[in-house]
Image (cartoon, rainbow, N blue to C red):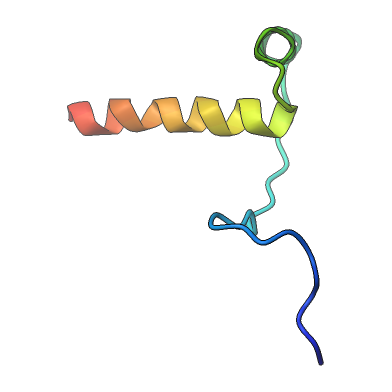
Length: 58
């Protein structure tokens, strides 16, 4: 079976996740994504990357 054809990438996104947000979190995410012109998925990835600094402080 041939490999799927698509855009080549150095960072494949193969880990799906489903999250339920409260109203305030959804508003913050939407505001961020509109201000920085990024998708909701990219906004969430950026938020997760910011958590890494908390891990390094321990």
